[in-house]
Length: 487
Image (cartoon, rainbow, N blue to C red; front, side):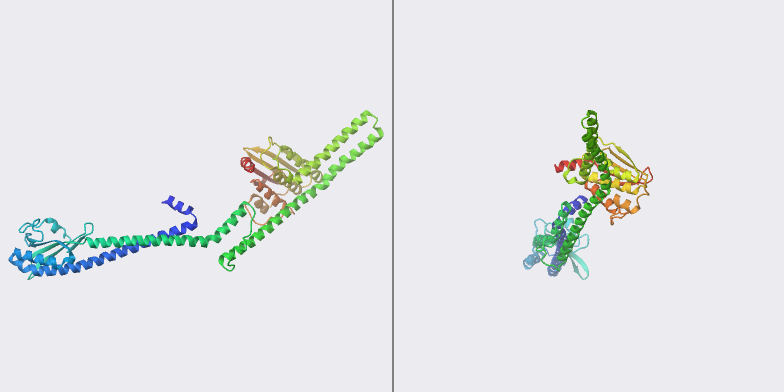
């Protein structure tokens, strides 16, 4: 029964509702048919009772005088006359007996001769003191009447009637009811199916647009589909289109905020990067001047060229790291161990400016199968926020490792700790507005958004320096399947 209900629930509503309505129709029609058949049976029984009453009244009046005299031939004659007079009752067999249970006469004298004993089956049928017994299965009715003379029983009449025509009428009515109700049920189920399809068509349109919005971008419902703008579905479509407009505006705002956050974090690093570039540039110019003045010396050339090579390599590393971080749309490779080292390199100017110490434990071995762009940008945001939250002269730690196919990257600071609203927002236990913490609300939003891109989760705890420890965890097995499906 439970499995049947589960299968019924899995059917489309356009089929489920007509089926339920058809089921109710069948139940109602069965109840109505039962009432009709009971009423027909009661009517037939009443009619048969009236007819048999008239038949037995006339027969008892005719045979009682002859029963008193035990006149067998006159009783036979009365039975013959009654058979012709009451043909509508279709009597099959009639017996007249005396009080001793002896048959005086019967309509079938060969089977039940006169002066023979009345079979017990005849008497046993009326053990419940009923004068009319209907055997619907065999199409027979059995009636009896006591012969009374001067308040004294002098005999009895037992008659078997053919009522098969009445049973045939019942069966005919039953079949008509079954076919009529079946036709009406199928007709109403079909009408209900097409009516439900028509009524639910707007809901299907809305469901299709919602499903499309989950899989790709949300699209408004075309205005031509909304025929009656003041109807319930018309207002629903208008509200959905208004919602689509708001969602698109929020998506555009989110993209703009993401670009602004990237530019803001780039700006925070610009001054440090300029210092990182200017320092080797000064040495490079000095080496060039030295070559101009003392280029004829082989030792000077070797020393100057070595200085030039180191300086240019430093500038190249800083520039390539910045480009790799802020132009992720051109980088579709997986995360590598050197990407974590690059982030530590990018953070060096900010660390020196605030006199912070970075403890970096890069334990990544093989390249994890996860997109580099969102992970690198999220970790950089966490490092910048950690640097901003830590007190001057404090410490920051960065740890990246893969344990049981889970990529875990943890960033800890020595600040005052993350407020509870920000914790709830990062861990996904609170879906309210982005909490702004010392101007870092957009940074938190960016981190959560980027980690969601790779189906990761964020955990917030306490670092060993007394501040906040934020750990991002990404299931590499799941990411591998995503990458394979995309390929």
